Length: 350
Image (cartoon, rainbow, N blue to C red):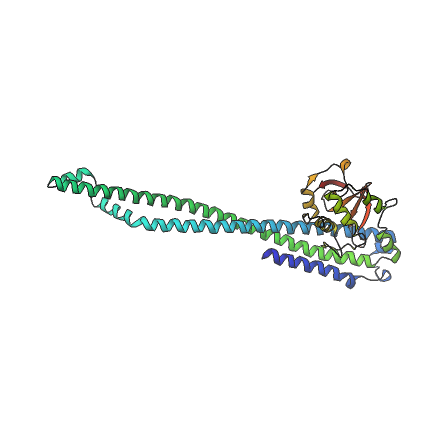
């Protein structure tokens, strides 16, 4: 339930950010509070800086959501184990109660000086027949008593084991709950940070002139890149299928937290493209960097994921000839761009 509430909260934050595109965007001539925005180059640099920060927070938000879901699953498992341990403890206590009367009688008889052995039978018998009767009865009583005591001891041992297991599983459930709560709080903070950053980015974008916005968006493909030639030259395979799917999304807008089909963030585009070939990728760029198998830069194939920045806060898909397909930042549609424009971190193949 906590995870569902947080997912709804995340969606609300992202929706608020998208609505702010219309609400906070202002004409270039009226946004002069920040001196940096008076210079076109400085304005683009300011927007780039703000967008970069929002992307880092956006991917960290996805990662926190993944972490929360994982910790919530651990919490559920720990609580289920504790419930099972409590059930075993209850059963063990019931068995103790079943055999407790017999053990109590034996204890009371021993305390009062009773004897249940053959020597005692000889001493109290008046005739051979009575001796046989006494010995027979005492043998049965002795065997039954021994069995009762054995069952009682076993039940007691099982209860002690179940009680210890219950204590440990209760501690594990409590720890898991505390961890989930801590991550939940962190997630809420990241949601608030992202909402504020989205407002800053959209305001800075609204302050750009038409020519600056056009320069920011750029072209869908770098010079000399022919998508038809690239696609025709692909070797059949699942990764190339993901690239083919991804290329159909060129021109779609960058949207924080989106996984298509109307818009994408960087990791969301990877999720959507691979979903088209029946593969499920983790939601964040950091989690995507932890999956698949590592690939060296020299061995990249179309469709491989390429990760960027030391914090792995951006991801694209290798499109051949040193280029990547990616959703880069707000104001820039999904496009193919040179991968050298970003600090390379590593690559993974799924």
